[in-house]
Length: 299
Length: 313
View 1: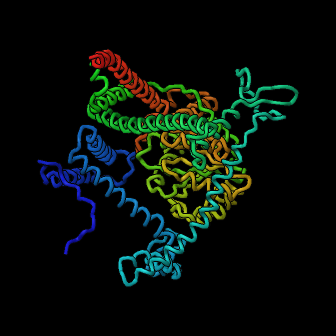
View 2: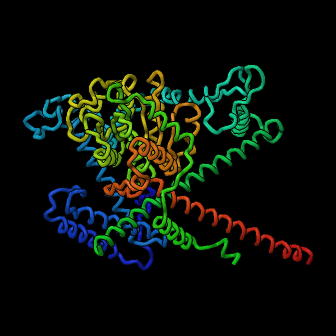
C-alpha cells in the first residue's frame, strides 16, 4: 500500500556538495565554543563591561563569523549559509522556550503551585505556596495534544471551543475599538465657522490648511484633498456597480487606482529605507569589531 | 554598455553598496536632520507627561523588538530613555511576547542610568517579559501589580519598590505608553487597552521603516500621539534630545553626545551618525534607478528605427 500523502520535500544539498560539510561546520562551531570556554577560564562574571572581560571578545568574534556566514547568501547559495540559518532558528527556538520557562511559567505558575518542601528557590514571593488548583491550567493545555490520540481527539475541541468563543467575542470589540476612531476622524469638514488650527510656529507665514475666508469662516484645502482621496480609493473597491459601464464610477475608481499606487510606492520606499537601516546596523557591528581588535592588537 | 546598465549582476550592486556604506561609516559625521512633525509630537508628549517623582504616574515603555531591528528600534529606545532620564520622568519597561526585547529593555536603561543618576526601583522599574495573550491585555490595564507580580531584575513583589507606590491601573497611573516594536503589538494596545481608558491612553509609536507608512492613519485619527519611523525617527528624536541636553547641561558639547556607546547590544554609534550612511545609501539607490531607467530609454530609442525599417521591409 502506497502512501499518497504529500509531504514537504526534504532540503537536499546542492549537486556535487559533500554531506561532510555539515559535520565539518558543526565541529568548527564546537571548536569555537571550546575556545570560548578556554578564553573565559577564570572570568568570574559574564558582564563584558567588567575588567578583563574576554567573554565580550569571544562573543564578538562569534557574532562576526555568523554575520559573514549569513551574508554569504548574497553571493550564492552555500552550505555555510544553510548551517548558520539552522543554527539561528534552533537557537531562537531554544532561547525562547528557556526564557518563557524561567521568566514566566516557573515564577508565575510552577513555583506557586508547588509546596514549599519541593521548591528551593525563594526569590519569587509566591514560591512554595502550594496553590494546587493551578494544575488545572496544565490539564486544559494538555487537551490540545489529545489530537494525537484518535480515540481522545474529540477533547481537543473543548480547548479550541473555549479559546474561539472567548476570542471571537473580544474580536468584535477590538475591531470597533480600532476602527471607530478612524471613521470619526474621516469626517473632515472643508469649511468651518471657527479656526481649528494651532498657533503658527515662528517663521511660518501662514497656515496652509486654515485659510481665512470671511468673518469667522475658514477653508481647509487639505480636508478637500482627504475627501477626494478617500472617496476615489473607496470607489476602486466598490464592486457592486460595474465600473466599465458607469463613467461616474469608472473615473473615480481609476483615480483611486493611481492613488493606491502612490501609497504603495511610499510603502515600498519606507521598506527600502528600513532594510538599509538593518544592513547599516550589521555593517556598523562588523566595522566596530574590526576597529576594536585593531586597537587591541596594535595600540 | 546599455545592456550592462539594465542587467548588472545583483552581486556587484551588493558589493558596491557595502563599500559605499563602509566608507560612509568611516568618514561619516552626525547629521542634523529636519525633525518630522510626528517625532516632534512624541517629544512634546513626553515633555508634558505628568510622570515626575511627585505626579503619581509613570510612563510605560514597551521594547517589543529583538536584535534583528536593533539598528532602528534600538536607537529609538536609547533616544527615548535618554529623554525620560533627562526630564526625570519615572518609567517602567516591559516586553510583550518578545524575550530578547526584555533583555534589551533592561540593558539600555541600565547603561544610561549612571550617566543620568537614575536609581532602579525609585526612578525606573523593569516589568520584564510578559506573555501577550488577550487575557493579559484585558487584565493588565486594570491591575498592573497583580498581573506583573514581580519585577524582572530582583524578582521581588512590585509593592516593595518606591516607584510602584500608588501605581495600580493604566487609567489612573499611566501618563503615556511608548511602544517600540518591530511587530504588530501596537494593535493590541490600540484595540484592547486604549478603548478601556477615558480619555484614551496616549500612545507613542516607534516602528521600523517598513511599518511606518501603514501607521500614518492612526496619527491622523489621534490614536497615536506621535511616531518615530525607523532610523530617521530615531535620528530626529536624538537631535531633539541632544539639543535639550546641551541646553540643560551647558558644559556638554555636541561631540560628547555623538557617541553614546552601548557595546553589549551593538549600539556603538548614535542614530544621527548612522543617518549619514543611510543618506549615502539612498543616493546610491537613486543613482542606480536613474542609470537603469536611462539604459531602458536609450535602448528603446535605438530599437525604434530598426523596428520601422523592419516594418517597411
